[in-house]
Length: 171
Image (tube, rainbow, N blue to C red; front, side, top):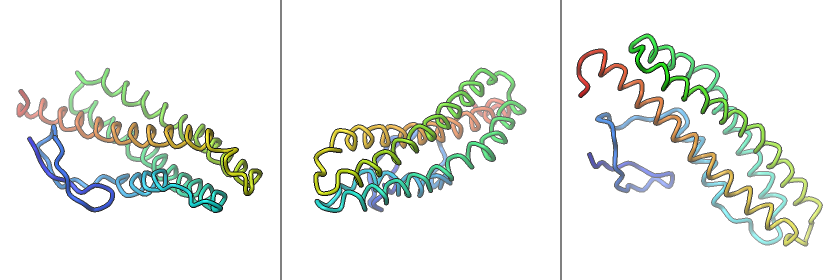
């Protein structure tokens, strides 16, 4: 099914959807969009330190939301999948493992964003010193945003599949 959704900038574009439910506002949508926007905003020359600080703060805020989702929402969703359809236990274990990886990535990236901020302070006006570190971290940050979105979609998909199989609505 083809549907339209708003991207982070508020514009509508076509995407391919695998579920029959539209207009779902996921709890992490806004924080992930803010982080993605911060990652995609280039630093203005002479403002690297301010940019790095803003980026670290945005990452820290997003991480709090992600970890709250992992700690409080996901366990209930996993339990619901298991209770509804025990055939999906292996899928739930895979989802739990992905949550563990995302939690580890939160910790690792938090350290890297703090290091980038410290490097930007040390570099002062010679911002070229941190270009490589900055580029690597931006790529890792965007990859992390994509992984978290993929996890949220997978959890929603398997929750729906458990229900559909249990109610006889699935294939």
